[in-house]
Length: 225
Image (cartoon, rainbow, N blue to C red; front, side, top):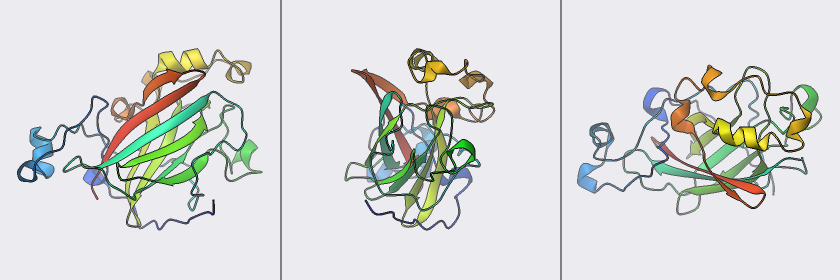
């Protein structure tokens, strides 16, 4: 599909972006909605700080579901849900922007991946259930970082969340025993050793389910729209 450039008017810091816990959420009534309800627990949203954008972001990525571009790796199907953090109601039409390293630990547009600016990068709009779907591969590792995926959420042209999504170490260990991951040395950094993961990474963990040779990774992200 044609590329679609998204307006970036700056990230909303502090309470500008939230990620919900993996144990689910419930919709609040109009009377119990709002930030105070979240703080009191009337709305069962588990909040987490935003995380760094990192050095490998490229704006204006393509609007597409399949971001693999033929790159090898264990198939990963992402199901990323976006909801309003005050009400836990789905947000339709949010633009979810993801980017990550390939199985070799390489980012497109940088270093060994500089010949392409597009692999493992893409944007999807959320449907009426707040869901954005991507077809990709399980990311590889690179020195100093645990395995992760970068994400931005745009609502009405504004960036309302910047974060990173993580994988359970035990699943990554299993995946990395397979080719092409097994052709590389053992990864240097696990979740517990990652300086970014330490800043809320446990609340940004994907829920993974294996289906055949693929994994389905799901999470619900609550944002302040």
